[in-house]
Length: 224
Image (cartoon, rainbow, N blue to C red; front, side, top):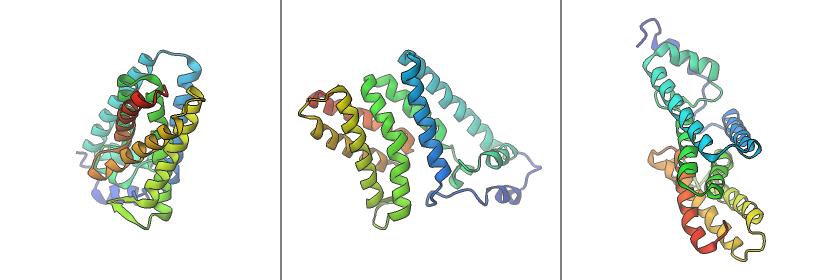
């Protein structure tokens, strides 16, 4: 621990850092923007899936190493929050940030699931997570779990349903099972986001749990 940095210094740096209950638009834009860019590069570069699995694992390990170093060194922690405070949450000043979990979730989904299913689960992560959080903060008056509201979960379901419907139409436009598939996939996506109420990072649960659920229901619906 750096002795030259007092706890009051750290608190002064972090006083404007957003809490989970705050709107925190910059983090949501960053979440959707970087995820969208990665998906665009995935399709536009034509690189093999194994390349992206490796890259995502490297980012996850690199992010974890940095976080562990940041948490050990108060000086580094202060600098991280000084220059990246728009993207951190207040709780992350003493905990691992969302980045390693985000990258790990992407890596595991691409590694274990069929490519079309893995990408759909990553779409859930990129868009459903921030949108359900946004609606939950703005309109989440009915709590169903700690930090989870009925309104936020409904927004997550609708987002996952719409993504599943249009994504499925690309692969199976004439499949009569598509509507049922999208409904159940939307439900799976919203449930995977709710799991973060049990102290599991939703950046990990959304792609991994959604990918598993979609893999199972795809055995029946045969969309991919």
